Length: 84
Image (tube, rainbow, N blue to C red):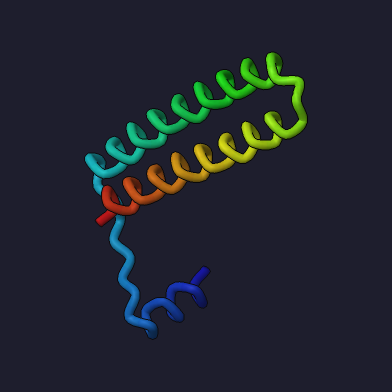
């Protein structure tokens, strides 16, 4: 761990501890997106039960993966903004 810190210091990367406000904001962001991802999963599973066509299922799977990736990316971006 110490080697990583010294390597970061040599590279000019500064680590600041998070404030309580930042921790709370990050927690809110993660909880919100966890709920959104769970909702997306439930809706996806419900839709898959009604789709029998393999091409339609594949299209729905691709859409689901894109939606998950979008939500995950949004979450990560907001967490990084809260850290700044």
